[in-house]
Length: 259
Length: 259
DNA sequence: GGAATTCTTAAAAATATCTTAACTTTGCGG
DNA sequence: CCGCAAAGTTAAGATATTTTTAAGAATTCC
Image (cartoon, rainbow over all chains, first blue to last red; front, side, top):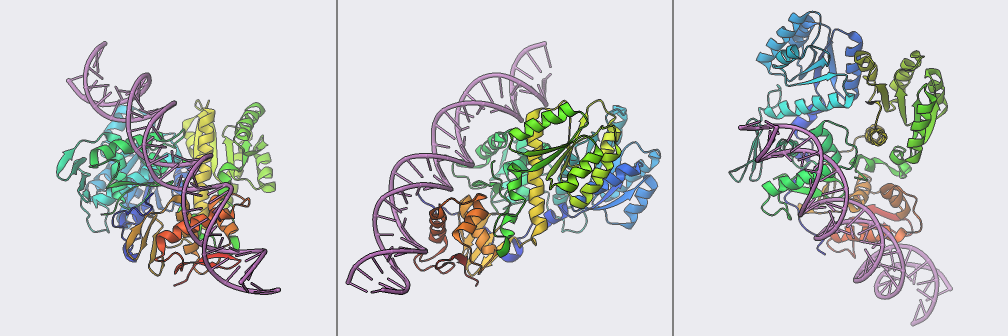
């Protein structure tokens, strides 16, 4: 049995072996938490701090504005039902010029129409009560998204198109082309592929993929992920049996080959 | 996936060549169940015991504190609505210093805002009535998560690329290159090599290697390790008979030459 | 409300990996 | 030179993991 099957070029040059620039930011961002209930704000702060994020708190719209003016913020977590609602719209306005990811927090009991309207300007929203892990997952997801849109300050404005060899994933148009040929992806397929292509060369376990894409804690066997992987392979690989892009690392997980 | 490898495990140096404490924990943890309803506590205990966990019960906050003081606990399952609620916040405080995973259990009917506030300090929560399997899955997920964090916290975060002469092990992409040529490793091979390359020049006995990689007490199967060593040599050495990197120290063990 | 698409689940088939055990080589002291 | 002990080799059988299939649920789209 040939043990020495070669994998495609994997950079081992020391300096680019570390995380893609964006990744560091996903784990290392400054987040503004806006909630009039100080206890909740504190709780969210702790949660995020534990994940390594730097947290700034604000208890109404005005404070939020100030915080935004004085700090470079990468993401905003916004409770929708604050007493001074005007602060909200002001924040929204800020976002229009700064294009920072905004995640709305709302209680399920609240008037859904209103939430809909307000959350239109946001990127995501969660309803109370929420699973702490889910909040973290969504925060990460948004940071990742904005990260490679290049809209969060710092980094060089990276293209909204992720490329690996003949694969070309337009994260704006949500469209994939393989060697120029457009290929249709389902929602889950897209998300999985985006996750992997955003971090070329990084191995994700089925569980990690599940958490990142489904935003749930995986329980019960995760064959689901594998089935999706297979379908993606069917679409992007010439020969799914011998994948060129979407590789498996035995006993560990999957990755998109760095090409 | 039974074992979802994290590369951090290799970080253990000479003196703790045996398992980092956290590792055995996923399948072998001590769990504190806090619920004022003794029947439910008992039921949860049985459920977890069946999975091989050691369970300690407490029926209010004070008892929980005592249990925490007297035992090494790896995870807490906490019913949120106990009569003596103060015990809860005390428990939360404990956690701040001990950083133990906490899973909140709450009834759906309970006030969601309150739950939110309280549960923010927690890592996950489930609502009653819950699926027993789901509870178990979440427990495992949390243990795994913390285990991972623990590993990172304990050892200094090692570089993501380990180099020794022409060997280059990318712990992120789980990929090895020998003089620039990518080489495929199996899961066990990878783990062994990572262990050795994380500690260049340090000699590990076959037993130590077995314990570190297999997470089991070796039972006179030293040959197994040797067979793996040989296969690794086959992949990384020009001439396996005269190894340049993976050396044997007679009567003691193996090491990766410091180059 | 029905058709089409997508997702999930479970189980089989296909592979890859691990372990075992018997055998071979090597180093070293007598 | 012989024999013991430690290390190395090999290959086949046992295990474990991944891939494939397919069918039923769930969802989405008219």
